[in-house]
Amino acid sequence: MNYRLRAFKIAEGLCPGPLNYYMSHWDTMDDGPHFTWLVQGGERTILINTGLPQKPEDLDNLNSASLAFHPKNELPADQIWPQQKVLAEVGVKPEDVDTVLIISMGAYATGNIELFRNAQIYLSRTGWVDFLAPKRPSLVARGGVFTPSTLTYLITEAWERLHLVGNEEEVLEGIKMFWVGCHHRGSMAVSIQTAKGRVVLSDSIFRYENFEQSVPIGVLENLFEFYDALDRVRKEADIVIPTHDNRLYVRFPNGIIA
Image (cartoon, rainbow, N blue to C red; front, side, top):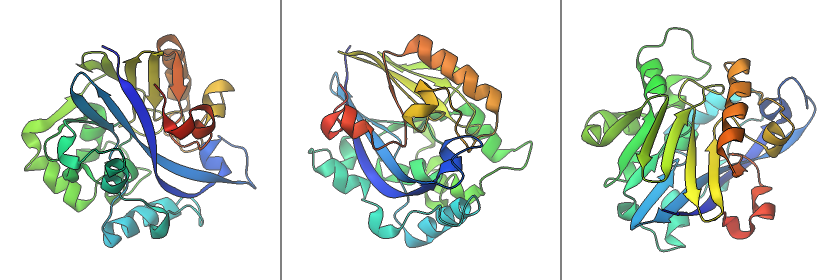
């Protein structure tokens, strides 16, 4: 099974350099894009991450959590494009999505899960347990992980469709998820079989330098897990896609990866 994979930018902000690059780039501000990824093949329509919350109060909560890291680390509302409108440009409606894969347990990536009411939902068991019963203080406020609407949806209407993924699982033929940690306890990678080989997206790799130059991301809970994640991704991947890098569109025009 070979899947098609395309990236869509759904938000653009500014990101302080030290958030992308560990203990460096102190005086720089980078572009801060957010993406969703559409995977299609075998009559399946799959979405990787579901984007930023659309209610103003939920976006305010997310920005408050982000501003705790840096006074310019926020996403303005006029630079966020609703996911359903972005997908509509290629003829995909929310009800068409049958599977949602969450590789980033933050409201910037989980904010619209409730839009996709026909989808099976896969996210990290480690991250879920840590969210519900944390053993240590979190770097992110609870509202920065799931909005109230998303959390209510997951534990009520979507409960029978929620799948908690362990260290590694083939969730669909040709698609597997594996835990990487590093950024957060709920950070995953997804490996997708395509005609170009295995494509891997990992929440532990924000920018191309993180992978190609082994520069750790700056917002991380465990530095050693970053290097473990690199080792695993390098063994797995033919193509590696960072999660927050506009240069993706230079290497893959129109976001068409495979």
